[in-house]
Image (cartoon, rainbow, N blue to C red; front, side, top):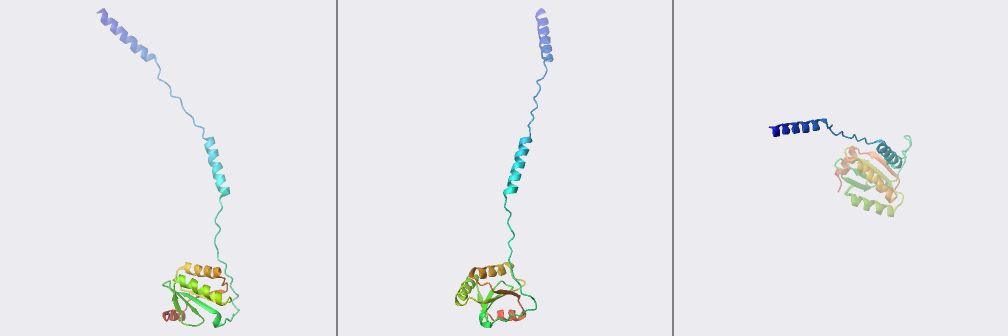
Length: 166
């Protein structure tokens, strides 16, 4: 029995020994966020100061006064029409209009510029046509060097003329 008592007392000692031990404390880790915030604001400030904003692209059109009539010779007038189906037509003076593609239009304008440097161009675009046609036509006229142009809406007479186109 004495062996059993020893075993009990030994077990009690071990239990007692473990109960006195305190659990390990976890060390709280503190991360200082100040340098991260400093770097973030530094980068933000850098990009704000070095970024170049895109300037709005504008097209300057000088309009004559309303009460001034400008007479233009029919022989020096190129009429460019764009219908509601985005089809382009061109003619000189009051000839019958001809359908043209964009490539044909560019070639036509360059040829006319070589013939005469003082052409007057009348651009007539339907309200239902895409806006970029007008911008592309004006850009091409500027590239070629024809800077005398006017804008006008398409009338019923123009629609009849486009119907006669070849």
